[in-house]
Image 1 (cartoon, rainbow, N blue to C red):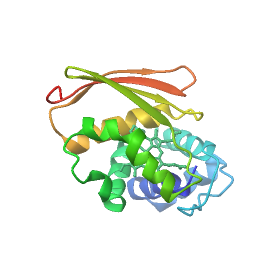
Image 2 (cartoon, rainbow, N blue to C red):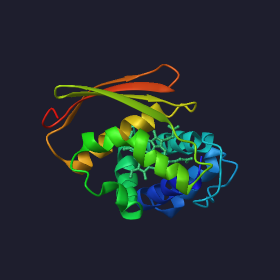
Image 3 (cartoon, rainbow, N blue to C red):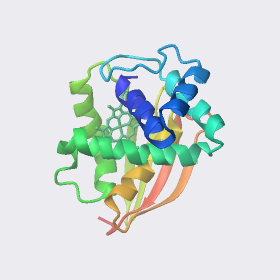
Image 4 (cartoon, rainbow, N blue to C red):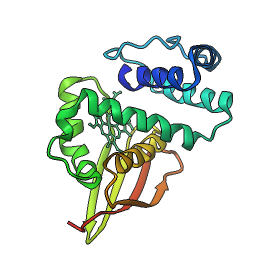
Length: 181
Ligand code: HEM
């Protein structure tokens, strides 16, 4: 995993919990890199899971709640740093359909060693079914990013169901889209 998401997670806990608590989480999590991430560096994705697990323990917040807040933060960062991917995108459904064959393709060009998941989708009427698969067990990250994406666009779309695979390497989401396009 590139340092982008990891360094943003550290930034996020510093902002939310303060530098001292963030440092305690990093120390207690036992991450190899000591929480010092360069955006272009390459790290074990396990460090994200270690940091998240420790932040959950430290704050006694549910993982899904913490991940939700982190994903909202990450989405603002995506908008700030990769605003190109938001041009001409009018809804969450439009963005979600473009992750696999556009957004993450461009991310891979920018960072050839990025480790990206796969997404596929089907749309029937106003129901979009989005499927996630990855060699990494980050389905809860995918779930929270779908939520952040819906929230970001704030149009009349809703996550109806989430079905997370037992090993967290796959997930299916159904979304009611605004206009059934
Ligand atoms: C402008 C929009 C987006 C940008 C710039 C972006 C970029 C990235 C980057 C840089 C990574 C990390 C790759 C690595 O560390 O090696 C990543 C991973 C990931 N992205 Fe995106 N992404 C975007 C939108 C989305 C959306 C809307 C979703 C919704 C589900 C998503 C789901 C994921 C997931 C789940 C991962 C973790 C890797 C894995 O599961 O294997 N991304 N993305």
